[in-house]
Image 1 (cartoon, one colour):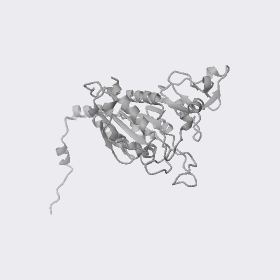
Image 2 (tube, rainbow, N blue to C red):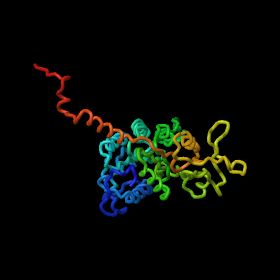
Image 3 (cartoon, rainbow, N blue to C red):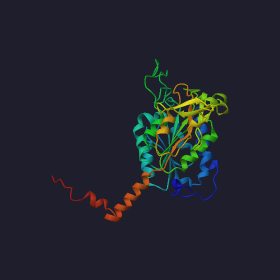
Image 4 (cartoon, one colour):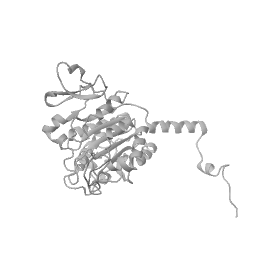
Length: 349
C-alpha cells in the first residue's frame, strides 16, 4: 500500500465494482458524461483494497455533486463551493480515511475558488475530481468560469465577456503537488490518472473534460473523435519526449528566444530539441507552460495526463506532528479549564 493510503484500513475481503454501487437510481440526463466517470471510479475503487467505510466522497452543488449518492461509501453532499473546506477538515482530523472531492467547473472555480486554491496550497491528503463541461448544467445552461470567451448562453445572449479559467494552470499556480487532466470517454486513460492520483501523498487535482450533451454538446469532440484527436491531443508520459500526431510528426520544443513552449513539425534538425516530459520536476515552470499550449477556442494542442507529481510535506501529517509535540510539551489540554480560565468574568445583575 502506498504512503498516501498507508493509514487507511484494508478491506477484509476482495471487492468488485458491484460493491461500490449504491442502491440509488442514477439521475443524470441520458448520455451525460458523468455516467462514464462514475463507472470508471466504481470500477477503479476495488483496486485500492480499502474498507468501504473508510472511503468518503464529498461534493458541493451541481450535476457532478450528485456523485456521493451513487457510491456505496460514506459521503456528503455539502454546500456550494465548500467541498474542499469540508474535506480538509475531514482529512486532517481522520487520517484513517481516503477522502475524495467531486466538484464541477462552476462549483469549484466560481463560489468555491477560494476554498479550492487553499486546499491545493496546503497539500491536504485528498483527491479532487473537477468535472469540466464548460457550462452550468444544473441551472440550465448559463456560462461558467471555464466557458470560452464570447460564449452565447441564456445568461450571455451577446456572448460572455469573461476570460475563462484554465483549471490546470490555476492548480499549478497554487503550488499543487499533483495536477492532471483526462477525458470522460477515455476509460483507460481516466483510470490510469485516477490510479496515479490515489497513489499520491497530498492533494491531487484531476480535471476531467466531461460532455454536457444537453447544454454544451460536443464541447470536446475534437479530443474524442479518433481522427481529430490524433492531431489535437498531446499525451503526456513522464520520461518520454512530448510528441503527437500521425507518426509522431509533431513535437513540443522550447523557443530559444522567448523560453516559451511551442508545437513544431518534427524534422531531423529539431528532433533533438523535443522536450522530455518531467512530471517530477521541482520547478513548476515547464508544467505551467504545457498547460498553456492548448488553444482555448479550438482545443488543438491539448495536453492530457499528469502535468505535475512532486513530493512535498502533507498538511495532515504536519498538523498531527504539531499536535503531538504540543501534548508532549504541555500535557493534554482541558477545554473546560480553558473556557473558565483567568480571562473570564461573571456578570451579576
